Structure formats: structure tokens, C-alpha cells
Length: 387
Image 1 (cartoon, rainbow, N blue to C red):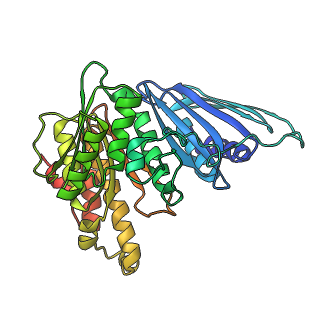
Image 2: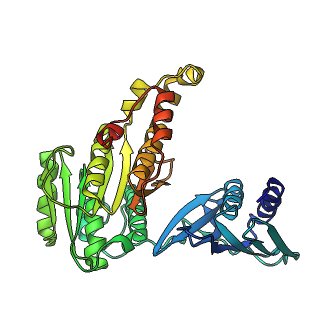
Image 3: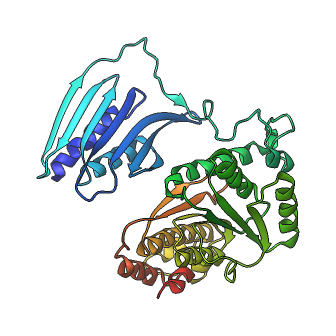
């Protein structure tokens, strides 16, 4: 599309991205485009209006939450060379957009005044949330870990942990098509700690979904490992095992289908990601923590006025680190997303890297090297996968 057409589409999107929106469906992908369809709906989250986009690619579905401004730019970008058809329904009217093979934009708009008595039908995300693990039904590992009472009621002080577990399972739900149904799936959780999410993962995949799985939890704290093994024996989780060991040196399996690493500190995340790539894991789920490596190296004359503030430099280093990790995974044949794991109000360490082995390797090594040169730093993950 030409710039004038992009601006026209942006204005249309901005007009309708409000509480009166019912839905937007964007489809008709250009050839060789993995993304087949995007559905957008309005949501109220903590009283704020946001727009949730569901991206459909093959048998997979990915979600992202956007502000009205972000969503308008997102829609315009999708229609600029990726998808060719847009259908928008709102109480304010209907819009149909088509983009020809030559990039010519065609917009049909039918405006109407919304009825004053019609209340917005936006779902309240927090009040009407349907969790994968239901409150009211006792789940043994959640009871023993102090999240639930024996009656199945969520302990008030542990509600954030309950939401975190369910949020993690939502990310897993999107990647179920990547799991094998005709053989056992091997899953490793590096740095499992008390294993809230390890137990949840096993319970969800094996007990609720019926997948054949073997799950291995690995941690450096022997007492934690002993406690987790005692609990898994109590529940009869025969395909769940916990081992004392280090991420970098673990060689207990010959292949792995999914690697999970949650809050592995600093370069421990890099070693876990490198292991996952070498194993050819189909799925990687990683929540990094304590990204000190780049922060210690990072310097740049242009950015010096910004880097002089320690807190700002620390947070920028963390963001640069995870963005580069995502690009390095792309360079190794993974389709990678960076998603919000839990709300920022609970912890700033709320980024989840989700990578699915799919398609060819991205030709971005030169760009990665240029960014590291600009920042005057290098990541352990880059060195580990340099071959």
C-alpha cells in the first residue's frame, strides 16, 4: 500500500477501536504467509479497555493484548503485505477492506448511530475469567503447595500464584498441536524450584489432556528436589521425576520435545536455551531472570546520558537481552514470541519467550552482531550457538 492508503486505513481503525467494537476478522493471506487469520475483540482488563488479537497460524493460536493505538498500527501492518481482507463490525457501523494483489486499497464503510440503550457487550477479563484449573475442585498438588484449601478454595494470599499457574497453562494450550500423539513427549523444566508449574504442567497434559509424557524437573537445591519427589510419589505421578543437577551439564536424556525454564538466573537461561536448540526441541517456554551479563558490558557514547541512570540501564539491558535471545532463536529456526507472563504490577520479571521450531532459519545474524556491537556487549547464548 502507498503511504496515503496506510494513513486512510489507520484513521478507519482508530475510529472504530472503542467500546462499541464487536469484532474484527482479518484474513486472506498472501502466498507463503504462515499467518492465516487474525480475530480481534475488545476486553476490559482491570477496568481498562484493551483489544485482544488471536493469531491463527496452521493449527496454532497465539494471543496478544493491545491498546487502541497499538491495535490500529497492528491492523495497518497486517493489511500491508500479509493479509488482504478485513471485516469490522461495530455498533457504529460496518467496514469491509480489500487489498488487491497490486496493493490497491478498497474500503466500504456503512455508518450508523449506536442505540443509546444498548450497553457495551465487552467481557470483563478479570471477573469472567474461565481458568483452566477451576476453583472449587480440590487439586492435590495445589493443596500441598498452599495455593488451595482442602475444600478447593483459593487461599487469598496465594491468588496471584493461582492466576500465574493458569496463565502458564494458557500458553501451553496454544502449543498443544506441537506435541506428539503417537509417542511419549519428553519435557524438561530447568530450575524447577518448588515446582508449582512443573506439577501443573504434568497435571494438565497427562491427567486432563491425556498426553503420553515424561516430565523431568531439575534444580540445584537438593532439599527442594527431595520434597518434590516425595510429593510426586504421593500423587502417583509415575512419569514425573526430579533430579539435582546443573543446567549446563545435564545429559540425562538423548532427546527432548519441550524445554521449560522459569526464572533461571542470568546466563543459566542461555545454557537452557542452547540445550533446547541442540536437542531440536519443538517448543521452548522461558521466563528469564536477572539479566546481569549484558548490563555489565553495555556501553555506548550515544546512549551514555541514558545509561548513567542505573535503574534505567538495568531494565534496558534486560529488554535488550531477551530481544536478542528471541532473535538468536529465530536464527536457529524457531518462530519466537515475547509475551507478558503476569501483570507488571506483580513483578517486572514478567516476560515469557515462547519459541516453536517451525520453518527455516532467519537470516538475521548480521543484524544481531551489529546490535551487540552497538551495545558493546555479547550474549552467552550467541557464543553457545555460534557454530
